[in-house]
Image (cartoon, rainbow, N blue to C red; front, side):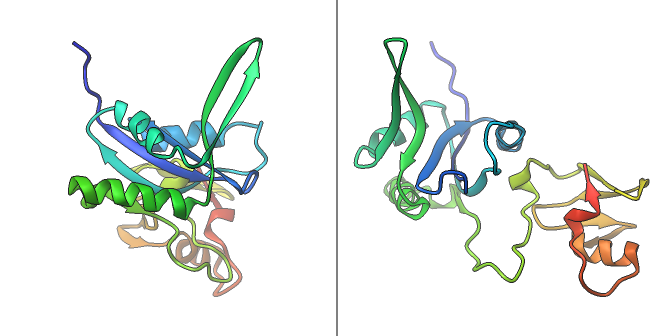
Length: 187
């Protein structure tokens, strides 16, 4: 009997190929994003658009079947056909399919959408989408002895206070503006 493995169906975008959306399954989303984004083969990082928590790995294959109306990346290599988890569609179109799937099964609470906000002058960083987890430590680049802890996808803890990367960067640099936290804090 095959063991069921719970995990997450994810929808990713990448500015390197904006007309394609990656739809896959993982049991460890932060690690999967980290692996994909550590590749030097793609000029830009993947962005997390949406997730759907599922009880078994076969769910993403079933969901791929529901995406039949969209062109899927496929090529012949050495006489074998390789099908990838990329679909030629907007992330919104794929999300709508996933949303319908969740509604039919009464599992809308398992569906999560990211990047819904219209970008401000500078887009806010989503710490989870770059492979960080709650509890991970970030270093202040000029002085690696100074560390902050990831609390959730937008917040960190510094000196017992929950705050943002930018607020801590301003404090450490003693500046009130023109500071981006990701530029002075790293893993």
